[in-house]
Image (cartoon, rainbow, N blue to C red):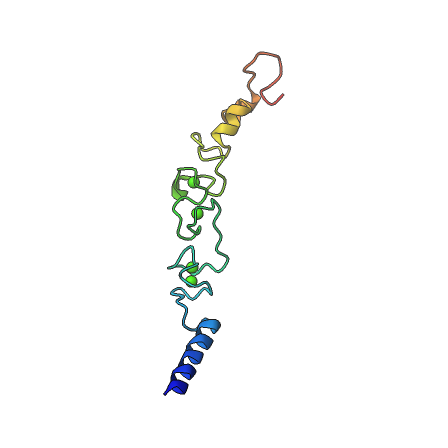
Length: 117
Ligand SMILES: [Ca+2]
Ligand SMILES: [Ca+2]
Ligand SMILES: [Ca+2]
Ligand SMILES: [Ca+2]
């Protein structure tokens, strides 16, 4: 009787060590307990903002408070607004005093040079 129990324990330990008993719902090779996105196969486990939620399950990949669908730069927390849709981040435009591509030819500080100079 003891021999059977010991053999059975041996089989369980063997299966556990091979991962056969481990749960991996999305079959991405990462067991559920360690998977940062249990329902989506994401073997690379990419988690840009390191909040423990993988990008494939994270509504806000860069954690800047702007959800991906509304974030022109979903993987860069520094940039999230582009009010004039000129593909330049607003914060960058303020920093360099360029409010649109057209504004580059203006001379806001009247130094005789355009805003890029
Ligand atoms: Ca998994
Ligand atoms: Ca996964
Ligand atoms: Ca995340
Ligand atoms: Ca975001």
